[in-house]
Every structure is written in C-alpha cells, then in structure tokens.
Image: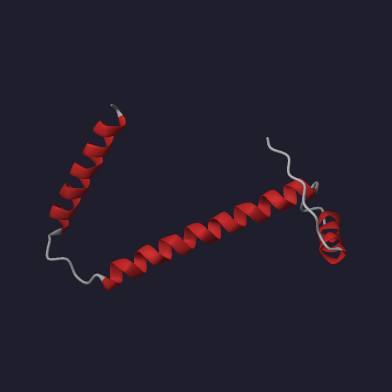
Length: 85
C-alpha cells in the first residue's frame, strides 16, 4: 500500500468529516478510495460510450456475423500465441 499526503481547504475537510460522521466510511482513506473507484468507473463508461459511438458512426458492415466472429477468433488466437512466447 502506498501512502499519500494531500492538502485540502477547510471547507472540503469539513465536508469529508461530515461524510465520515454519516457512518458510510470508516476513515478518510476509505472515502478517498471510493472517490477514485468512482472516477475509474466514469472513465471506463466514457471509453465504452466512445467505442459505441465509433461503432455506430462506422455504419453497417458488409460482413456476415459469422465472418465477424471468425475474424475475432483468429485475432484472439494470435494474441494468445504471442502472449505465450
């Protein structure tokens, strides 16, 4: 575990103290870890939404679903072989 030291204005420190008093978090570290996890989830969702937008913008594929799955299986096989080297 890595220890970090941060500085906060009094208003934010008071807010964090109130959140701890609510009983949802046992200490400052638990609260900050949850904030970072929430940020990670937002980033993951944003990346996924961007992939969906890119997919929709690319239009309809001329390939059949079976062709697409076969291509994906070949790519996955190549990655597995490369990872094993």
